[in-house]
Image (cartoon, rainbow, N blue to C red; front, side, top):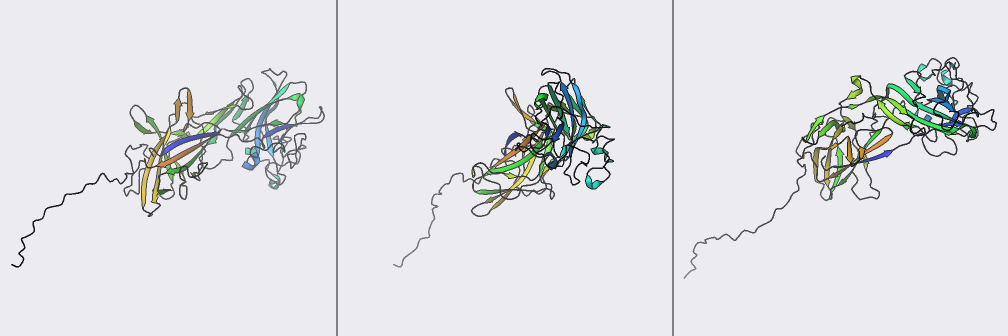
Length: 449
């Protein structure tokens, strides 16, 4: 949709906070277990990890002698931390001394999250009604034993490196590089929020304080949402589907060559692994997607979004601006650095005159959404999706649109091209003239003499 103006409003989302905390606290220095908790009563932000269907995460913990030490001693090595609601959801908590149905406050050691006795030789649950059973290897620890750990007050601080979902293999942590590496396939793109979406987090706390350790988990993947509004006075606008029933709004992967003014079909990554780098920040690490050589990791298929129902809101009719949202959310994996792949969106809609209900249908209006834009030294990523980012593609439908109003019911929704010809041509009266009177010869009429 040329001049179906696009704005890329990009917002960072930070997930976790209230639900993803490592908690350690005790009134006695000799009894200060490192415990895991969620939904602390003094935390109001974030989404509970378990409410998203995630019932475990993995953590490495290292203690450091001094505040500036770069090499530490291991406390936890890929420990599995599990959730239990006490009624069969998650893990059996029978042998967990720190488990409680409530997260409590920042001074206790009771929590629905625990790791004690979740080792492969310790977790012996055979009753599905109590939680995961010992033969569900996907949800089990890589460690033979997982004992309760305590704060070592001879050390200055402890750092925690965490991720979810837990993996017993295909994931490693290099303490000298401060990096978690996860094999290809940890994240797969899709149209519904995947329960196994990869999240990552980190934290550092001083051992002497024995304070709760808050972990803010971040998304490796991104979200893409579509929304619309219109600015065609005198008409109501409604997005429609003129392709095969149910296919919705289509977006063709493509690149655009500025020098030749040509569009070419392209592809994008739908599967990835990850590297989580803590060298610059322990609290907000850097996530980088990694890619295997499997051809199935790359797709050239169109993205497809459901058509929003009803009349599209008018520009400036409300404050703040209202939008018609597609009900579809796409969850992409991050794209390779330097990606040039954007998307040509195909949108059809009707214009209905407010005064006489005359209807005009615009078929297959198109607009190209680039991978990124650069102004000066600042690059804004638009279709080259980045981790932990929501992308709102906002389309403003105006009278300066492409497409066609002819009776076309099967447009080519796979072409990446964006036509330059307009679709709407206004009815214009191009001046008016008055013709001179035409002389007429009337036959001679004789009136009686």
